[in-house]
Image (cartoon, rainbow, N blue to C red; front, side, top):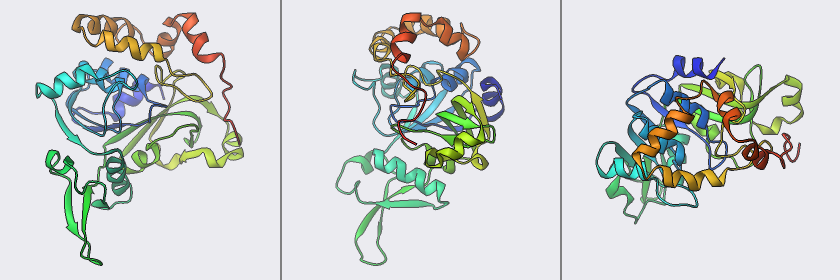
Length: 292
């Protein structure tokens, strides 16, 4: 279905939303559609919330973030997120990368919590009271536990899907599978829709089976300015530019007016990008996985 329909149907005010991807395959198109539709009071969950969460906060969509490390990768702080946290405009719940993935794993496994040792001795439990300690019933050892996270909806970008909704991704993948299986609804945007035969030729690339997917939207360039391996590279120039934009509220308004509210959909967004930018990001790509 069109992305606008998927967001309208399956993302509701007050939902807990997990927008997956680890530097790669970040669902920016879906994030922009959430902003366009004016979704409110969302709890945003994500390992490494980068620019998309800065933009969702700027768009007035967020009430709380559940996260591990946050920043503009390779550049610095997320200025809007940082200001919102420091001014207490949004709540936070912070984990380590591993802790957040374990919380999703617990949710996906229908368990109430997941044990791990990496929080013991750190300052993080003092900052997040939802991180607890229990006594191991076998050894008596103190073990840290994190609670299950079960988002209302996971939003994932991937390279391709079949008509039946089997989702294939390759390159650097993050916690897409765990987020999908932990969530009640799963929206996936993809660079390409392919025949079932293509999926069956490389079954090892299937990260989410169709029975777990609620909606698939064909959204080429849906991860820009992050990247989709084999389709386009990361737009490092934009990450640097966002640091300047996000420092100025008027510049943020201008960016939204032009690139979020000023375009109807991702196709219009893609066509609005300078040809030189598209060529720079796409010319070296093959649109096929490196191995089968």
